[in-house]
Amino acid sequence: MPKEWKKKEVEELKELLEENPVVGITSMYKIPGPQLQDMRKDLHGKAKIRMSRKTLMKRALDEADREDIEELKDKLIGESAFIFTEMNPFKLYSYLQENKSSAPAQAGDTAPNDIVVPDGGTGIDPGPAIGKLQNAGIKTSIEDGEIHVAQESTVVEDGENVTHEVAEALKMLDMEPMEIGLNIKAVWQDGSIFDPEDLDIDLEEYENKVKDAYQRAMNLSVNSGYVTEENIKSLLLKAWNETKSLAVESSVLTEDTTEELLRMNYSKAKNLKSKVGDLEEDSGSEE
Image (tube, rainbow, N blue to C red):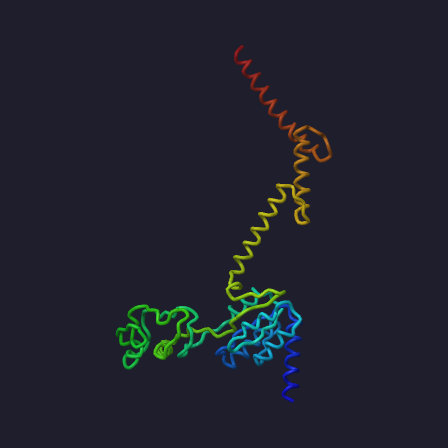
């Protein structure tokens, strides 16, 4: 019976790996059950999380008929889960980052960034709390009957572990510096593996750069006369405008140039008439 269960589990995972265009490995480290349920609800219709035994996940990756997807096995370290989606890897990463929630720090947690305690009032009455804050490396003073943080300080630097003293102090200050959410370890798409550093980009800035590059390439191709499916209309319009301008300059009368030639010649005639009038006035004044 246990063997049948494992075989069925591998088959289901394999099917999911082959059905979904994008597959990620995400860390499940220290994600409480209630928060995980909320994440599943938020991801409904966008992505699916599937946890299983690591050995079964590796076997499914080996058996799945997807190019180089087995390379995800190296990312199955610690508490991990598959995430299946049709979102492209960059949108998936961005979505998960934006939907993280704050949480209190626990002793032993790794700081996701510098944890900074700002200066100012705490609303805490003087007493034993002073010693606990000072044990965490926070300078304090008493002002207006309450404890004040005398100087802004970084109590934990990015990547360092939170100590018991710091965790207690942060709870007293009602600070929640930790982030609860799904942390992507790697994402597979079309035979390529994307690491978090590859996916951590400003999508709006990237989109603007792509648009700018496209426009520059379009201008270059049009100005050099290089014909493509994208620029053929622009090239035809450019050729038509240049041909029309040449016809007008050469006084070639066509259906397209008649109006412009008449307007241009009318302007010339009007200018000539004005000059003739000036000459007649000058001649009259001499007499």
